[in-house]
Image (cartoon, rainbow, N blue to C red):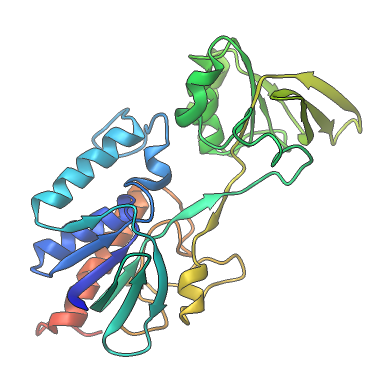
Amino acid sequence: MEHWDLIIIGGGPAGLTAGIYGARSGLKTLILEEKTLGGATAESPLIENYPGFPAIKGQELVNKIAEHCRKFGVTIKEIEGTRELNLSDEKKIVKTDKASYSASAVIIATGCYYRELGVPGENEFKGRGVSYCAVCDGAFFKAKRVLVAGGGNSAATSALYLSNVASNVKLVHRREQLRAEEALFRNLQERKVEFLWNSMVKEIKGDVKVKGVVVYNKKTGKTREIEVDGVFVQIGEVPNSQLASNAGVKVDEGGYIIVDERQGTNISGVYAAGDVTNRPVKQVGTAVGQAIVAATEAFGYIKRPYYYTG
C-alpha cells in the first residue's frame, strides 16, 4: 500500500488548489478524481467573477489550475473513483476502484452533483433532450428551441451560452426574480431570453426526443404546454458527501460537510473544501480560498511546525 503525506479526493478547483499548496509545502501529494478534472467548473460556459479573468471558459480555467498543480509535482489520477474511506486511525486509508492508499492527512473536495426536477419524463428523456450541462450538449440544439429551468448563476450562464446557439431560449423560474447576479440578468435581457416567472416545469413530453414541456404558473394557477426541443435543468446541486459521511465525517441537514474556520472536520487530520462544505458561498473563488486554508492546515497537522496550534 503506497503511502502519501496528503491525499485529496476531488479534482475540481478546490482539489487542484489544495494540491498546489500541499506540494509547495513539501508534502507528497496525490489527487484522486472519479471522472476528469474540473468538476462543475469545467462545464461552466463562462466565468466572469474570478479575479484576474474578466471572462474565461470554465474548462480553460481548470486547465490553467491543473497545469500549475502539475508544475509542483502533484500526482493526479483521473478516472479513479474513491469507494471507501477509513479515517479513524492516524494513518488514513483510501480505497479506490483500482487500488488502496494510506495518507497522513486527507482533504475532501468532492463538490456536488446536479439536482433533478423529479417530474414525469425527466428520466425517460435524459440524453434525448434533457441535459444538465449546456457546454456539453448545447451544440446539439443549434437553431432549435430550448428551455432552461432554474434561477441562479448556473441557470443564467447556461441560458446565455445557449442564446448563442439556439433559435429561442426560455428561462423558467419559480419566483418573480432571479437569484443570479444582476450583471447576468442584464445580459439575459440583452440577448432576448424569454422569462417565465413564478413558473415550474411539471412534465416533459416527447416521443423519441423531447417535444415540449408542461409549465405551471403558481401565480395564475394556469397550466400550459410549450413546444421545445431541449430542456436544460439548472436548479441547484446536492453535495457529494455520502462517502465521507459513511466514514464518520459529520454533515449538516443538507448533507454538506461541517467544517470549522480552518476547514477541519470532526475527525483529526481530515479537512474539506469547496462546494461539498457547509460554507455559504459556492463560487470558484471561495473554493480556492478554502482549499488554501485546508492544505496549509494539513501541512501543519503532518509536519507540526513550531507555529502550528491545531
